[in-house]
Image (cartoon, rainbow, N blue to C red; front, side, top):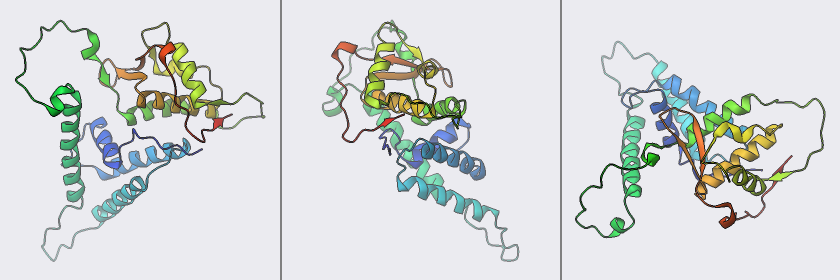
Length: 250
C-alpha cells in the first residue's frame, strides 16, 4: 500500500528540520552530515511505503552533487575563487524559512484579521492556561521518533501467524478509545500492543491521519522533550472519512 501524506511539505522542509535539529547555520551547511541524515529519512519513508515525491529524490541527487563538487580540489594555478557550491541551496533555504515563518504567523492570527484588519485591543492579562507552553512537533521529528520504535520491532517472523487485519480507520477509532478518559498519552504508549511491523505502521499512519484531520494534537512540553498525543474532539462526535482503496496490514 502506497501512502501519500500531506504533512511532509517538501525536501526544503526536511532540510530545515535537519539544520535546526543539529543546531547548524544555514550559511555554513555541512553537506556530508546533512546528506547522510537526509538519506536516512528517505530510507525510512521507503520502509513505511510512503509515496515519496520526485522532488525528494531530486534533492538527494542535488546534495550528492554538491558534496562531489566540494570534494574536488580547486585549481591552485588559476587563482580564481570558485563560488561556494552550496550558495544556491543556502539562498533557497533562507527564502523558504522566511516564508514558513510568515505562514506560521498568519495561521496564528484570528480568522477575522486574515481579511479585515482593525486596531488591536489591549493585550489580555497573562492568566493563560498551560496551552501556551505546548510546542508543536515537526512532522520529521515525529517520523524520527517512530523510527526508534520501529527499530525495536522484529524484522523477520519465525513462523506465520494468522491474525485479523486492521485498517487505518479501525485503528483511528481504537486510538480515540484509548484517549477517551485521559488528558493525553505518551506517543510510545500507542504502540505497546502491536507485535508486527505492519501493525506499527498502521498505528503510525492512523496518528498522522488524525493529526491531519485535527482530531488530535501532537505536542511537546519542551523542545526535544517527550512527544505526547492529546484528543481534540469527543469520541461520540467523531466520524472518520474512509479513503477509497484503503487497505489493511496483517
